Image 1 (cartoon, one colour):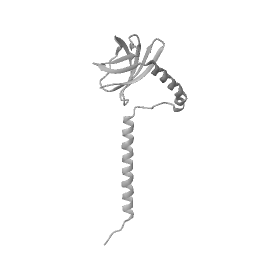
Image 2 (cartoon, one colour; image 1 turned 60 degrees about the horizontal axis):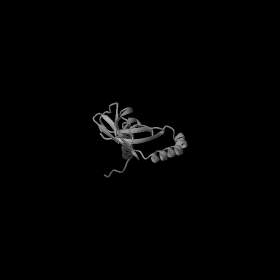
Image 3 (cartoon, one colour; image 1 turned 135 degrees about the vertical axis):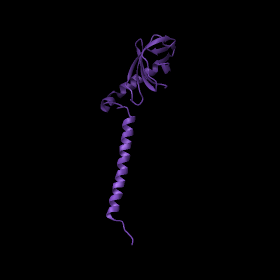
Image 4 (cartoon, helix red, strand yellow; image 1 turned 90 degrees about the vertical axis):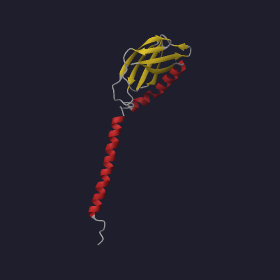
Length: 151
């Protein structure tokens, strides 16, 4: 005797299908919420209104010709800062260290000059990868940079 496709088979197929779909959705939502540290911008409309000003500021910063490199020396962050005419020894350097995945809180850092365009953080920086949002002021000029500190 041959059995056909019954209502029980259909019910089992539907339950199995939706179980797989729900399991995949829960897994993806869990991975996404654990790996994304927050919002890119709080209000996209306000950000769009400021966009042209940000472009103008970025162009002015590029005209300064400053270059920045971040590194780790022991448990401190170090910034190498150079302008078109050489090192900038009298600049004021601050930064905010951000963990790339947002797993650790942001850490404000202040830097002191080590001479020859090198600045070392006063505060310690825990081991691991960090993204530094650096702000440099030299006289009336200012520029912002983002650089990674290697683990």
